[in-house]
Length: 483
Image 1 (spheres, helix red, strand yellow):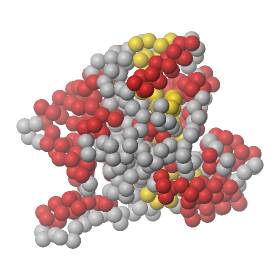
Image 2 (cartoon, rainbow, N blue to C red):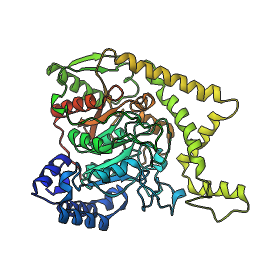
Image 3 (cartoon, rainbow, N blue to C red):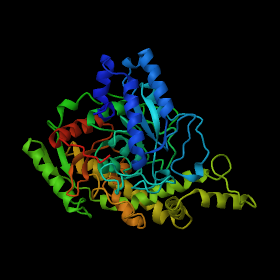
Image 4 (spheres, rainbow, N blue to C red):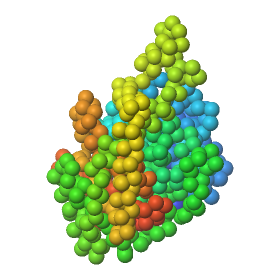
């Protein structure tokens, strides 16, 4: 077993004892990428030479021993800017663009001693649930290469699941960290909105986007979350709340916590194996004397419709900047300014992005703003209130990460509505701005992983993480990837 298949915390212990070096880890990660990524396609770009050079320099200096990430390779989703590197957001429209600055979350990785080892594949502009919408082709699930890894952060999830990175960063607008984490059998966390700076994240929907970590275990996830969290004057939505030690309470597990199950909401299209997995987990929790009670999220059934109005409205505004004037792709078929705009955007954007821009522009247009956008914001307020009422009675809410295990590549790509419903259980959390974590909870009859998510109150990541650690101990999940 190579060092690349060990967890972040385990590796940092060995590194700080001097039993291994950052170069040893980097070499094993490089070997894994060269062996596997031709099949998985987790990376858009892998920084092999830079990784080896930086790891060698750290090994020689020994400076890594005092840092939280200790010279470990961390992959970054390719909608997160890194200075001097191409940032594509999975789109042709950003071809040729090199970022002049580094996103705060990525800078925090570097500041914490990590090495950014590459950019991972994603659905174009993070718009998708399968990583099939990328201009660079789909990523594949390391558990079964015929299946999707989820999305939009499928490349990051697949990289961690296939041992091609020790950890990774993704972004979560409607479930884009948690759903692929569930599909790929890894841990993925969406922090409280504002906990991690969005500066340098290419915007999809500004009131929903949040950067978060992928890792192999809850403890690894806690360490990586601590490394990337900070207030940031460059992000007006960034919270100035103190960053606690997220690993501090992990040993407490689920002791003394009450877990709520929104059964009324989970009746919506859940596959039998997902229901059975959750029922089995609830029984195991009760056997461990964890209080499990029913809660109501009465308006969550409207979350999908609400989300695709708000998110697409924000996307239509945010993506207006991609016009061929300042950077990225510009058409060669321009007769005037108008045709330059239209041809550039038609050539540069994929079908799903065009669909969402059109929908978003429609719901913001005169005569429809009140009927759609304003109404969706009112529904969002009701969803937030439902969570607040539920948290008056419970510490955590638990539900499946997705209504099914991973689906075959190509199965849903021609049916947008069916694809959108893949995120039905994750979307309400983004609308409410809450912290949530996806953790492996079992394996479906077809051999693909299943996941559950734990949702907490705002800024209570510590409670979410300790609960997740308790579930992790009970499940004792074994990874069985084919690559």
